[in-house]
Image 1 (cartoon, rainbow, N blue to C red):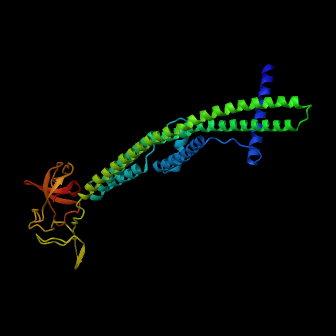
Image 2 (image 1 turned 90 degrees about the vertical axis):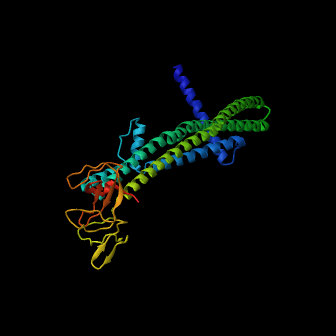
Length: 380
């Protein structure tokens, strides 16, 4: 029974306090009651905290969009995070593109120029996908997580204490209003009621001292929390540096991957067009680098290699347009007409009329045979 009485009294007291605050707030809005203003320093700290919260939320959300453009994937990750479960690993866009390229190149044939180029592009795209995954993980850990911890942790504490400060201010101003009214009533009262009104004044003054003390204490607590915003900025600055470093690493990796790929693709002498319909050129004659029609014959650029008919079809001979080439990868000859290759060795190559455009004739000492152009880098 005593517990129930206590709960009822507490509920009644809380309801009275809430009503008093509501009345005070309404009268302030209507201009019918005075409002205790916070000191300028505290107001500046509150403004700085609110500004920090707003911009931190915007930066955090846009960074999430940058790292994961797919909104459905972001929602899924959010749900798994709230459930405290690890999100399933999914293939990202560069990795998916890379896999498609590798599959296509494999089907077209790794020995063909296009097939080999597709495989190399696909492998590069998959490396970029791996770098992208590392960027997301590093950025989430070193940048997004600290920002989110501030929004969901530190700022929530600040907001809670700020709200409590607002309530203490309303209590203080309500006490001031009651004391002011009590004094006004005492002035107008008759001598008969003066003793009772004087007692009301004493109670109002005591209430005012208590609410003033509680307000001052809460203002100090709030001020101390808000002064920590400067430390938050310093921490976020370090996190920003980590994010920039992660981006720098990512873009440097991507640049290096693409630079290596460009070198590999540039080593493909795909502009050496050799097919059964080509017109023979006399030894030592340069062929223009731009395709043009000369009568009904198509002349292709060979950048120094000449297309000539050997004097004896059964004995392929080197023409005056031979060049040196560095072997990029090991290659095992499929039959006696091909020449096996070792990576980094230098051989002599030249073209022969009637040979498939994906092949050149290679020569190493007294060994001679067909070699795939995708395995070579021509030397100046």
